[in-house]
Length: 299
Image (cartoon, rainbow, N blue to C red; front, side):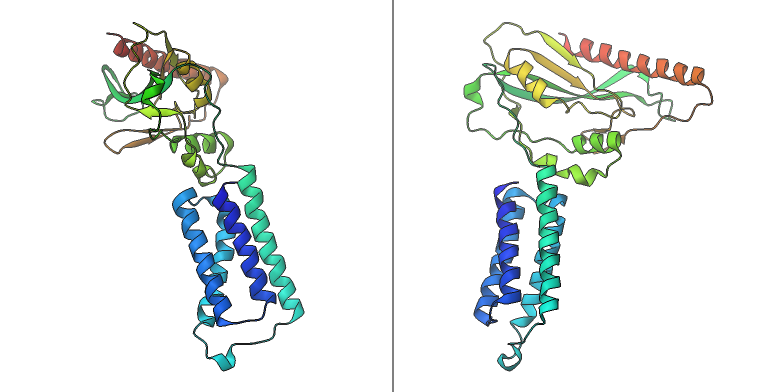
C-alpha cells in the first residue's frame, strides 16, 4: 500500500473509534471532520484514487455525513448515549470495510518497477503509421487503409534522464488484463499510477553508431505496453525495441485523433477447419504488420 492509503485507513479507524466511544464535543467533531476530509483529498492528489480503496472511501463518506450535521446541532441536543449493540455493529462494519480496502490494495498494489541493469537510460516516441498498400480487412469501408500504432524505445544518455519526469503505464494495460482474465478493467485502473523508467522524446544516445533492433508483437488481446520490465532491460543494454499494436486483435489501440479500436472477438466457426483458415488469415495480417513496421523503421 502507498503511504497516504495507509494514512487514510488509520485516520478512518481512529475517527470511527472516537465517534463511537469518545465523549462527544464540537471541538472533537470539527477536528475529526477536517482530518478525514484533508486525508482523503491529499490521498487523491498525491496517490490518486483507485477502486481498491472504494470501501475506505465509503466509510470516509459515512463519517463525513455523520459528523457534518452534528456540528450544526444546538448544544442541548449534542450529547447522546449510544447502545452497546449499535456501537458494536458499527465498529464491525468500519473494521470490515477498512480491512477490505487494505486487502484489495495489498493484493493489487501500486508497485515499483525494478531498476534496469544496463548503462543506458530509456527514451520513447510513439508513431502512427498507415499502410496505403493494404485495405483494412476489419472495416466495412473499402477505402479504409491499415493503420498501426507503434512505440520505439531506444537508448539515451543516463545524464539526460536525471530528474526528468518519466512515463507511467498507460490505460491499455488495464484493458488487456481485463480481456484476458474477464475482470472489470476498473480494477486495474491503478496501473496508470505506476511509474516506468521511460522518458518521452529524449535524445538518442550517440555512444554507438547503430543499435540492434528488436521487434515486439504482443499476442491477441494484449498490448505493446506489456512486458515493460523486459523492454526496459533490453534498451538499457543497448537495444532498440519497436513495439506494435495490431488493431482489432490487440486489447485497445488509441490513435492521435482520439479514435480507439478495441479488441474484436472472432466469430464462432462451425468447424475446426474454418477456425484454422481464419487463424491463418489473421496471422498473415500480423506478419504484414510486422513487415511494414520494419520497413517504416529502416532508413
